[in-house]
Image 1: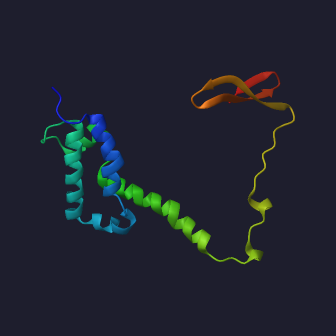
Image 2: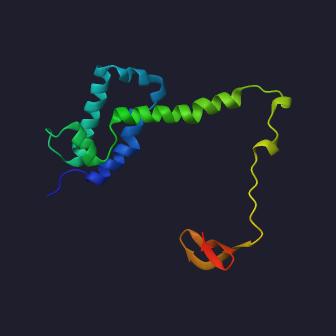
Image 3: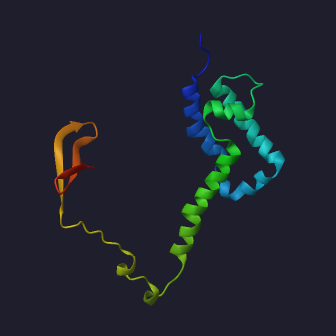
Amino acid sequence: MNWGLSSKALYTIHKGAILPLMIYGVPVWIKALEKECNRKIYNRLQRIINIKIAKAYRTTSNEALCTLTGLTPIVIKAEEEEKIFIILRGSIQNEIDKDEKPKDWLHPAEFVRIIETPEDEEIQIYTDGSKNENGVGAGIAIFDKGKIEKN
């Protein structure tokens, strides 16, 4: 007999509900994980979840549990999320918010790259008429001196 939720269901609950709660606001409190006592609390919480997902014994090591479940250790995941935040919001925010006079704006010709196709190639866009749940199939064929490449 099986008792409780399946590993797949527990994994989905962890990824969708528990993990977002555990790493919510990580850029604000990431410095707290430098203390060993805070790391232990987080690792202990992840260990409980990993034991349930892997349906393993309590004596299984935390590293082995992370390997069995395929989950990144929570401390590493928190550091990763903080770096993603800095990359996506930290540097872009500074670029958007800074004031520049129109004379200092970049001219579009300085940063737009135009890609031209060589004259001996012909690009044809076609549909194959097949229809599935995602829509109608389509493709691009590039003809180059008798060779056909499909993308």
